Image (cartoon, rainbow, N blue to C red; front, side):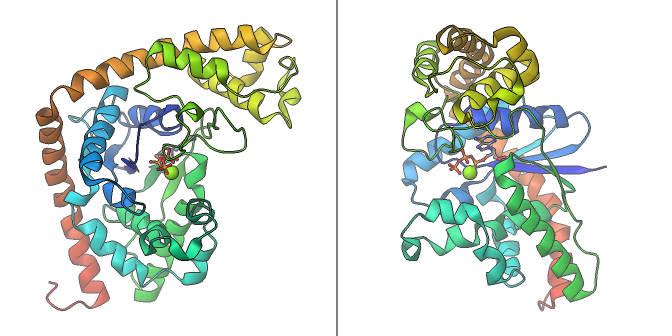
Length: 333
Ligand code: ATP
Ligand code: MG
């Protein structure tokens, strides 16, 4: 059976972009694939995390997965640092990937900012760890948002080079799964930037934990241009903020952008935003309620993660035995 791996970083509040670009898709995939969903805490520490906060956010991320519909009975749910294979395979991949490949990664450039010399080495080799996350389980399919496409290409390059260098078909060449609506949700404050947990402005995103009033306020204040909504999708070109709001509406209502504009085209933003806020509240409130219920019993979340880590480690064990033997690390059977 085909195997899916995906994850999100416990770097802050999970948001609408994570939901539309990732979690919603993860839930659907549980029906047809063997799924492994990971809270990637080792990725999170590529930038500074306050230790006590990281622990809380790791639990909250797991709660978000479950609240969105990830079922720990059907899928494996755990946090990355509990399975040592991720870090071990990442080291081996550091020795397979080339510096030139990593130099092309745009996320590093975005996250490191101007002062690249001060970025952690971990942030630089992040894509190697991501390749290890996926390939330690020989996953065949990876659902991600548009922003992770380049990293997934690198995973494919690493698998190809490893197989080629050692002359053995050890790793599969993974396929991305990127659905159309919601693949790239942009910041509410800047239509050129993606919505992110790590954006310092809380007003830039709809958190899955926001209550109805906050959601309505953030949408009301979302940046727009002065024109009314266009009559058709072609009219969204060069209007990033309008595109984003129409795109969010479409994804939440399970409509195409053309359908949304057939209903709302020509309107001013104010009434459209009111409708959008109602829709967002209707979709997100059940998730936020379930998250707060789960967070009241951290021991239960920890127990789910313990079980998941055991199952994940059991899947990774034979893969790592094979990798050590192929690479020539003494002691491997
Ligand atoms: P950070 O700012 O810490 O990188 P993030 O908001 O980018 O956080 P990640 O944990 O890096 O979230 O990503 C988790 C998943 O959510 C990935 O599959 C990613 O593609 C998806 N995702 C993140 N942001 C968006 C977005 N704005 N639109 C669509 N999908 C997104
Ligand atoms: Mg990210």
